[in-house]
Image (cartoon, rainbow, N blue to C red; front, side, top):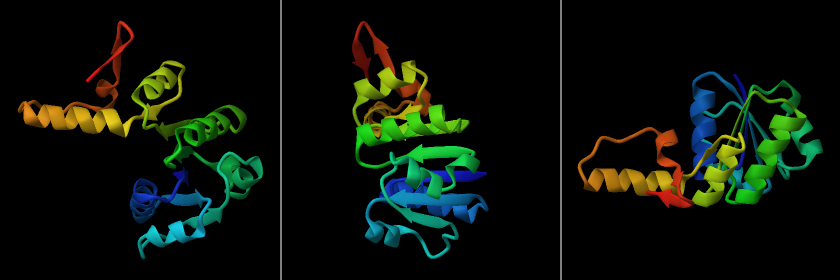
Length: 151
């Protein structure tokens, strides 16, 4: 699989290293070249310095040949915009954005953009652990009922 990961923080670098180790073609984009130091020594992919919502940077990352696009920067707006560009402009079949804000994550998911909200997932996993419950799937942790987020 040819994967582009936007953001080389803790999650991005860990994911990039794991996917590279598994034999996937991985390109990581980050605005800060120092962030690439987080990539493990077994990382065999490419790195691109730049803004992930800039089409020239995305083309430099070979987005036209990507099978998947993952946005895990620390900015919800950047993540949403970049996956929308990847999905709509470049027709990338699998896109996902990490979103911190639970309400926004659920709203964008309802609009057809795959999101993962680490805030909700973390809170629900801890709650399930404390109550001795089985852990659920990520998709089960984003539920809104009567305009209220259920945790």
